[in-house]
Length: 105
Image (cartoon, rainbow, N blue to C red; front, side, top):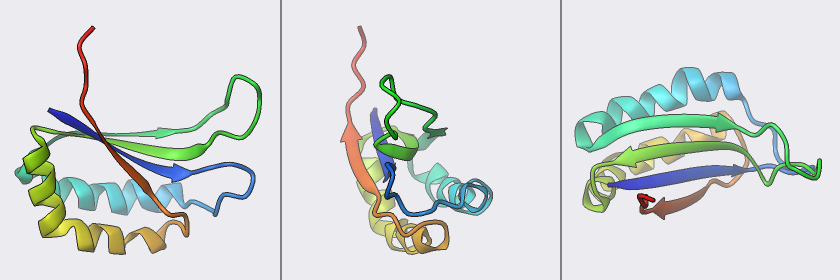
């Protein structure tokens, strides 16, 4: 299992982010295209604060759980272009994508 983090930069100079479009159009597109390709779970978190009161480094983070790295790579190869082409519809921010391996503890 892998966890793909798609993080949209925050901070004082962060580009605007249309959360309504993201939740109503973009994430359903992601789910529709990738659910049959190994996407098991998708969560969206919206930054609320930092401990010191400074602007959060990321305003929105999508957490996508895939069965395997291979499943994600195949899903991205097949539909990644379409999904990433939708980003300008909700933000001008450049997404930061990170692939993670969850660890039990």
